[in-house]
Image 1 (cartoon, helix red, strand yellow):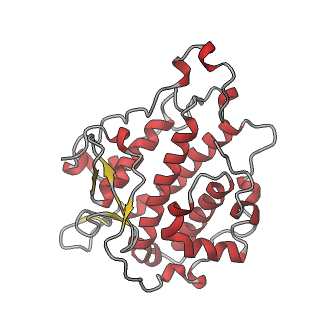
Image 2 (image 1 turned 180 degrees about the horizontal axis):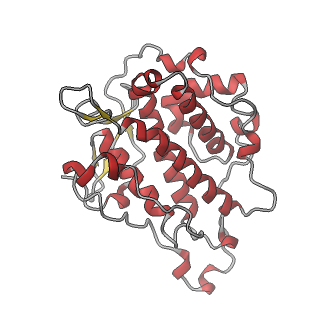
Length: 290
């Protein structure tokens, strides 16, 4: 049974391994396939503008990176008309679990906090719902109309395709500081406080980035060849550029743990070595410790 409250269950950090035998080097872990569709340093695009509040910058890049990710997710939600039974490229038959190769399978927490396995398309839909719900929540992200669109899941899987009540708005995570007394908040400080962001803001940002990383990892491990490599000559380089910028930002501000990045570490190492990921980003020069 699909979790009734998906937004409350997005913070499962687990990644399990069913097969510890080493995999052959994936094609996208080779320098020839690691090329980007853009040239030049991504550091100027990653660094926070001098006079902008850090909370505002993180909210901006979170929205921006979700939009970039969704453009790539749209490709795997296209219907494969050549199949015997037309279905989205990423479907429960070909992707019965949310995985990133044989070594990483991501699970979702149900209402009892029990990890459960769901098809990748269902997992991605949950993440999309949760992230869009957070961005549109004026308490969690108190910005002016930052994101006025629904998840692409609505188009790819009309009527929820039997997945259960994913149409419900995700439940905000944790208490907000905006409904606590000023005396209770005296002397406390957190990222985004001066710009009106709640104390839970950084937790929400890190959760969103960790989950968006998992989607990228699935795109590479399960769909790099189809559709990204075969669709045209540049689609895989566009995917690389989007993911490289995403990683540059996330590492610069310390939004990932080393364990989070393991499924894609070989590609990340290529970009660090060739300078696509700037040294400041690789070293987490602006890492947030909160």
